[in-house]
Amino acid sequence: MELDKKTKFTLSIETLISLTVSIFMLVGMWFSLQADIEEAKELPEPPVSRTEYDLKDQMIRNSIMNTEEKVEKLEEKVDDIKEDTKMINKTLLDMNK
Image 1 (cartoon, rainbow, N blue to C red):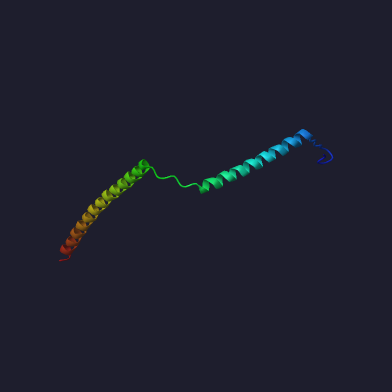
Image 2 (cartoon, one colour):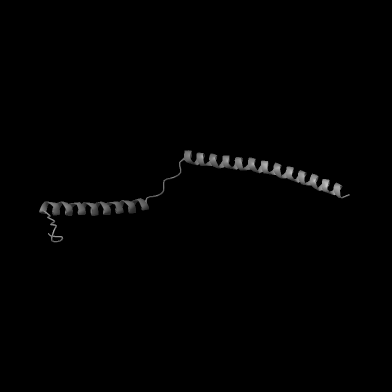
């Protein structure tokens, strides 16, 4: 087999057979993989284990507690800001008199 005038490409019967066998093997593996994927799609989802449930529950509870602490701190800051605002208003009213 010639690719152009300067180069020649030879292919033996053994190489052709090896190439053909390799292609058939790859196609077979692809179809096998597709069948395994379809089978996996039909299987039921595994149940959530008790340990996993407890860990997720604890994580959610910790998150709620952290949020509650942050809200309390924000409420304290808002109360401080309200007091500061009252004092500023009182000072401004006293200055205008």
